[in-house]
Image (cartoon, one colour):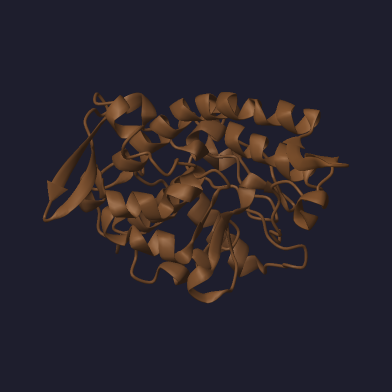
Length: 293
């Protein structure tokens, strides 16, 4: 009872004087709780779309179900997605046994989904036209560049790159690379364009999660499905302007920097927005993380 009484904005406690005690939600809490069904309804098409894209990114358009369960919390999947969500969309998904493992398989390729979050952002900003004269666009002192193959970079305030570093970043930002939605088996990692494509794959994977983050172990679990580099952490560190890494061993986490404004997630899905309302009701902070920029 003491724990319940710590949250008077969420719970009403009644009874006493001979009456048995009872606990009920406050009117404000009831109003927020009624929004859960709507939040989950709004999430379903997002989850279905992101699952399809996740499968389309993989080399065989299939991923073991145990791995999807492992990253499921980051995607926002409900615990019962195998029994509720997957059977509801047989035109998109099927479950097949592959070498003794149940795998989620894509049933229908949709070219309209083979567009990355990076490309969608650039298109909205008018920079996805490959005919734009790239040679006329200057790279800023922080390495950012308004071009169709560029990534948004963000470095810590005290980071002061030398000229050599900026020249290398400029060359990399201008470098064309294949779409992450093309099969990884078509490319050799010795090719600089293929290595840049790997960065785009990692960027897209993080973009498909609710909070634009995954743990090292979750990314490493997907190594064979996306042919990720063996030195994955080194790859992420090399591109510190795109990714932020916490330093906590196997439980370390990789964040997509551009998804955050300081420590706050810029865009939130319906489920996160719903969760934030309950967190605020409890007097806790909403979804925000310490991401050094």
